Image 1 (cartoon, chains in turn cyan, yellow):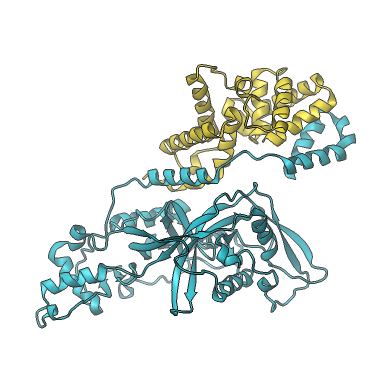
Image 2 (cartoon, each protein chain N blue to C red; image 1 turned 45 degrees about the vertical axis):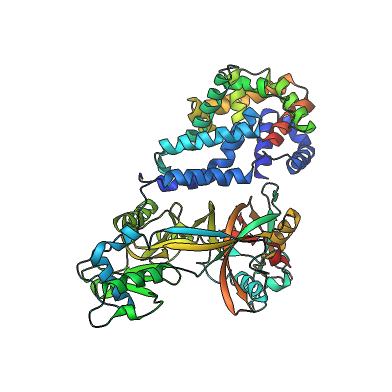
Length: 453
Length: 175
């Protein structure tokens, strides 16, 4: 609309007489714009080129979590056994048991069974119902195609004096959904790291007891604690290949004053702190894409600096997005999923880091929704933020062209009573206009047909 | 990795569509546009000075030079603005409406100088601001604005009213 007006304005400047026919011209322009052919962009090309660029950016020597050579390592539970391994022979660098790897095992179609479940739908609905709850919630996932509008409305809202209801409008390019099938990935809990590490420890011996007597032993977790000023604790869960590094609280002074606006570092500086930390500790980033600041952190800083909020953010989150088959993974709340670093804004140091050092995935093809009308319908009707009451002022929320992503969901299998982490193909639609009181930045629609049934 | 390089993908997300469109409209082939777009962004990454240091004109200038190189390699022209006449409506992938619109535009644009064509194309097709066009072709914003208006007025004077409107609409729909 803005573009039409701009073009018309330029036309009228050249020939004011054309103003007499403005209605007619505007109608023709609007019609032609509606029917205009798109510049034929292949979304796969966009993703593929993006991946190539990301690869080029991250072309650095591969690192492994080689060693935490800390002055004193305190014993902490079962993990203390690892101390012997570390001191023994720089084990990780030689054997790579904690090396950063992604294993993908391809399976037959629909291998994980039906993905849809009541729990799944409930989860999407709850997310949607809560989206207006807090300033900090920037993004959200809408219920998948097929979930009715009514289900997505939070019935317990208290209607304010001047209610607003939001109308979803799609103004992106024609959605092209060529693929009728797509890969769904399931995180596999099977990890060999714990067994292999246990074997090494058994070989070393443990003095007062013969560890070799323990058969089929497996190391569950380990924890190392630095005994120094501003020291860290390293903790690894070998069951699910995850790790975390956090402050050894006894060794960190606590700030007594609120950080001043002018003390807040800029985004590049914050990201650099995370990257420097990863470099210093040789954390392998090869599973992850380029770092970015979490939207929540960005907004908290902007709000504080602009005076919209008195809340002084003490830390900000930097995320290195997890990449599967060159696709970025997003959580179902719309935030980037991956390796996270919490940066202390005052001291400009990392105070927390967590993620996966290795990931085992199973891959199976599923039927995808490729009716773009269904997708658009879902987009325009499902997100119900606002108040469906008489007299409510209607405000448009405009969505732009989506990009293909993978989104993380949890699927509960009622037969086995197990919960699985799945990564499913989805479209993420950006909100391209600014609307008072509407804080979603993007909306995710899963494409797996099961979720629509 | 240099400071600020982390912003490159954000920059890519922001400009991919515009750059692809810029190139596509000048080569009218999806395959070639994809190749050239890839090369443009890879080159941009190599030269990346950080987001604070670049404007839209920076990436457009890389794209423009790459398109010129492409035509030079084909030994057809070194003048990017005459690409219009080369790539033109012969492309069978264009539908009838597009082809007709393009024919009209080609005819009409013939009454403009190379520089005038260049400015009109960048303003209406590529949605560059007058300031960005100025940076790209080395002129002030004010002079670009005047040149654009003069160009449109020339078109207006040289075409019947209905054809002029069709031309502008054509430029819009091809965008």
